[in-house]
Amino acid sequence: MSTLNTAALALCCLVCTPASFAAEATSPLAASWPGIVKVDVDATDLDHRIFRVREQIPVAAGPLTLLYPQWLPGKHGPRGPIDKLAGLHISTNGQTLAWKRDPLDVYAFKLDVPAGSTNLLVEFDFLSPQDSSQGRIVMTPVMLNLQWETVALYPAGVAAHAISVEANVKLPAGWNYATALDPSAGDANAPTADGMVRFKAVAFDTLVDSPLYAGRYYKRVDLAPGASVPVHLNLFADEAKDLEANPDQLGLHRKLVEQARRLYGSQHYDHYDFLLALSDELGGIGLEHHRSSENSADPAYFTDWDKQAPGRDLLPHEYTHSWNGKFRRPADLATQNFNMPMQGSLLWVYEGQTQYWGYVLAARSGLWSEEQARDALALVAQTYTDNRPGFAWRDVQDTTNDPVIAARRPLPYRSFQMSEDYYSAGQLTWLAVDAKLRELSHERRSLDDFARAFFGVDDGSYAVKTYTFDDVTSALNAVVPHDWASFLHAHIEARAAPLDGLAASGWRLAYTDKPSAYQRSVEADRKSVDFSASLGIAVASKDGKISDVRWNGPAFKAGLGASGSLVAVNSRSFTPDRLKDAIVAAKSDRAPIELLVKDGDLYRSVRVDYHEGLKYPHLERVPGTPDRLSSILAPRR
Image 1 (cartoon, rainbow, N blue to C red):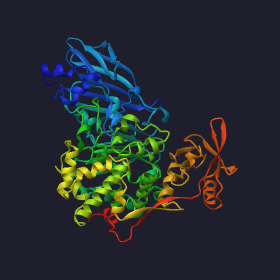
Image 2: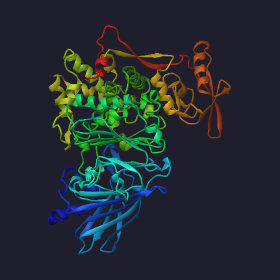
Image 3: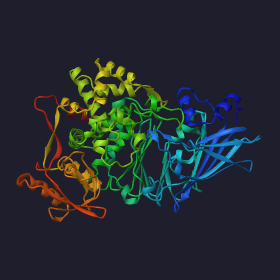
Image 4: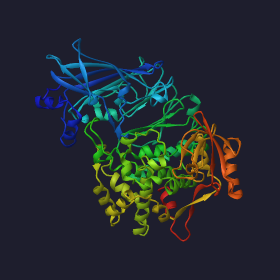
């Protein structure tokens, strides 16, 4: 054990209250913590879905505050599941220590370490959700998702990268696992005979950035055969049959890795692991990490390939985050530990540009056809053409506060309230930037050049390199000189949707009376039918439950709210086809569409005076303009 520096210990043992956070944001935390923290997790209680934690923390005598991670990277907000921690017991040398939770900061636990103590034993249970109403399901009878921030306390007053941690986990018999962590002995992905997996010591922030998937049904696919830097696709499924993927499907995932390398010209990891759960039981997720990503998809992701297009931009999106968000990170999101508040002022770059490249790489790799990519973009354009009246009072920049404001809770009227629009409105902003770069350079330069210059630096390094707004505009000016600061401000601070990039790319939004095959797949996946472009409503296809009503749309103006269920359409019981037929009929006979709605115990009739027929978004070429969108989506050679 290393010698403890007295001054460092004094700083490490400061009680971190909310008042101290402001100082922490500008003052460096302690740069070292003595010894190695050891975290042992027993993940074998599948019946009760409990992770049992035994943690050893080197300490010295005096006051100490232990923190449960609160502000989580990738979630951009205070989302640490402190409510799932139970049974906390802290001891040293066989003596139970009293602790007290800070009433102003419920993630902080205060205690006094007695003289002569060198090590704390911290024990608690992480009671993972039994039902989705309690949170995301992370343990099922056949697989689990272990996120290390949920099973560890750490000392306050010290930077997360300065705490060294050895992590071990006991898995159910016969299970395999995958993670970006390196095992301390034995082969990766295969536990020892006793089910224990032991990992090499890493910094605490690296541990939190390296989640683990484990399960009974597992397949590992090499996505970069023969490459010096390995990339693997780790598949976990509810049933063994869902692991079957044909060579062509796997080839497209290999092309994703190839196209990303061609785009960025670098790799900021020593190996990368896609963790992909093909499951109806494990909670859905898409979460970025530096050397891995947590992902989930429909169990039929491979076995019913033609119907799964809407989910195939997820891996390109999360993979892009290895460059944008993990390696290059907005300065106000790069906090020193997991209990310092984050600020998301540049989420329209972090997530918005990643959303842009997620679509582009899905097309360039062949995970999407060019037509599917255009149809997906048409749905985005339709949203921002007539389904975001919230721009009357908010702009894209303000939505970067939504991870704190709403934390992805369901909203009554998302079209008016808006929520995390920095993703898709950010995507449209970067389409406009790409088109402008191409226009100004006479098609010689593009956002590809920015990506390589900005995210592709320091090949092989995965030390975080922060960026600011000025860094972004300077890098754009190095590609093609322009007033990029004004251009970007005009897109993210305007009380209007950033739609100009579509026309500048040679395409425009158009409506027909038939949905694209891509939209039909989206509706099938969501088990809903979407009439937001016409009637201004989306409903469950099976029971007519109303999932969304467009603010000030035809249904809203008729008195329909975002609650209840459609029972009947024009005096006949509801089916999606009958609602479609009623919308078509109203285009010619001019009679209002009469809907019977059940809301609680109340039945009421709503007459919607709408006569413009079915409307589904598509993209069509603008004659006489350069087809920049097709150039953007084309694979790089």
